[in-house]
Length: 199
Image (cartoon, rainbow, N blue to C red):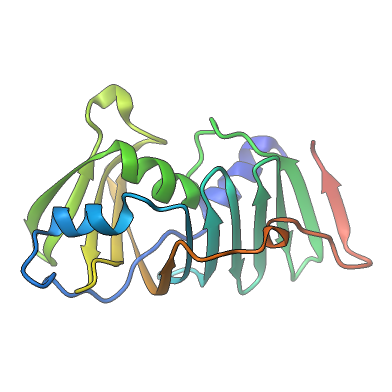
């Protein structure tokens, strides 16, 4: 499997979002968003979209674990394990933080800190819109992200626009800055599985 195709599998994995409430206890959406996410170091959430659902656990610095129905993706900031359960195959590759593939940790730990937030009225309601501070600062081709927040300020829906197309993700059971055992970011293939190591 070529590196580009392997990275596209990561890109095809989930992002975020879910039901939303526009109210934030009288505080501005941008202020609420900044208060909740300015010190984000780790996250644990359930995600769903039209094509995929599962669980994401991630820690700032390139560590994440994505568990979906037929796939588990694990990264320890050095290696990435892409395990497909139905074929009993695991592809291992080197983690590249500069890769131009969509990844969940970049959304939460890079993009949310680099893009400029503003409050916008949309057909779905009031949202926090994130845009690059300058076209040259665009990250992995993402032109815009609209985030809907619940009353506590947690992201419940995330609309990501790249290349003119928008993908919606929904989240639930979000936990900010939970303690996550480092062992969650290592993967060992079950006995008898086919292992393809591209490192």
